[in-house]
Image (cartoon, rainbow over all chains, first blue to last red; front, side, top):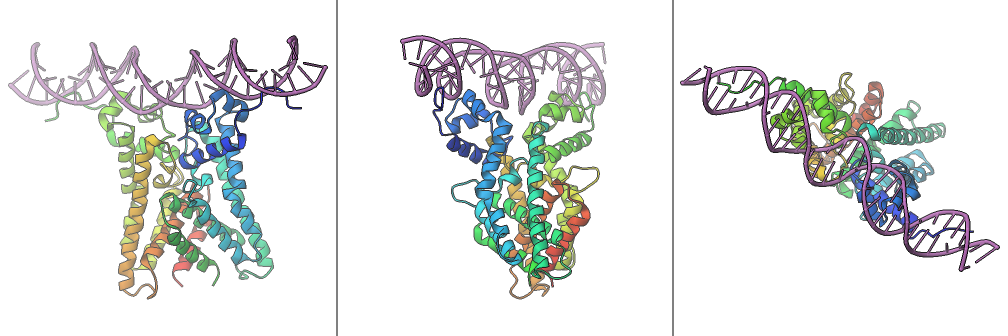
Length: 195
Length: 195
DNA sequence: CCGATTTCTTAGCGATCACTAAAAAATGAG
DNA sequence: CTCATTTTTTAGTGATCGCTAAGAAATCGG
C-alpha cells in the first residue's frame, strides 16, 4: 500500500528533537540549521514532513502537551479541589525540572515576547495558557458545588491565582531553582487556598 | 569644551524607544532595522552611541529598572513585611499593565529562552531576578527579627514564593489580564503569607 | 524488468541579519 | 580662515535567515 521511497528517519523521534530545541531556546532562538542538525535530516525532508518552522513548532507543542504538559489534565481528574491544586503544582514542578529535558515550560517560554513573524505563535501560547486556566476554573466550579470550597470562594480567582503560581514556578525552574525550594513555594500556595 | 559635530538626536529619548521595543518583543524579536527606525537614527549613529545590540539592551535594562522596575526598591523601604509584600505586588501590577508601555515585565520576557547568541543576556536577566529575590529575602530577615513574621517563617521561602507570584503576574499581564483580576490574585497571595 | 510515486541529496534562492568602511557635514579651538 | 574632532549619511560587507528547485535513489504494483 505504501508507495514511493520510504522515509529514512523516525518522524516521532525527529519531532522529539525539535521539541527539545524549541523548549530550551524558544521559537526565535532556534534556526532551521539547528533543527536539521539535531533531527538528522536535510531541510527538504523537514519541510516535506512538517510543512514549515511554525507548523513544526505547533506540532512540537501538541507533543509537549500530550507528554510533559499532560499533568494538567491528569490533575483535573483528582477527586477534590485540594488534590487538584496539589497535583497541578507538583506536576508543574516535575515537568519544568526534568533531568532529561530543558528547564521551564514550553508554553511559557516558547514565545512569550517575540517579533512580528512569531506573533501568531505567541497568541497560540496565550490561548493555551488561558485554556488551562479556564479548565481549572471549571473544575473549581464543580468543587464548589461539591462543597469543597468556601461559600464565598470565586472559582475564577482561585484558578487564576493557581495558574499565576504555576507560571511563576516555571520561571523559577528556568532560573535553576531546585525542587525542594519549589515545593516550599507550592506548599505556601496551597496554604493560601486551603486552610 | 565639547568638540566635534554635535549629536543630532536625544540619546535618552532614543534609549526609551529601544526599551519599548525590547520590552514588547524581547531581545531576539527586535532587529537593528526595527531599532534604527523607532529611534530615528542610522545604524552607524546607533553603534557609535551604544556599542552594539547587546550593550543597547543592557542599557535599556538599566533604564527599565530605574523606571518601571523601580517599584521593587521602593517596596523594600515600606515599614513592615506585609506592606513590603503588598507594595511589591501592586507595583508589579502597575508596571506590567501600564497604558503607555508594553504588557508584562522586561526582566521576565526580554530573553527567557533564547538562542546561543543571546545566552549572556538570558543569564543577566536570571541574575537580576535572583538578585531581586535575595533583596526581598534580606528584607524579610529583618522583618522576622522585628517580630513581623511567625517564628517558624523562612524568609528565603517567603521571598521565593512572593517572586514566583510576581513573575506569574507578569505572565498574566502579558496575556492581557485586567488589573482587577490581577489584584484578586495578589490579595490571595497576601492572604497566604499574612493571616 | 517498467513506470509511478515518494524521499533523498545537492546546491543555492532572495531576504534579512548585525554591523561597518568611507567620506561629507558640523561644530570648537586657535 | 585652517585644523582637529565628532557625527552624519551613504552604501554597502559577509553571514545567516527560512525555504526550495532539480534530479538521483529507493520503494511499490504490475
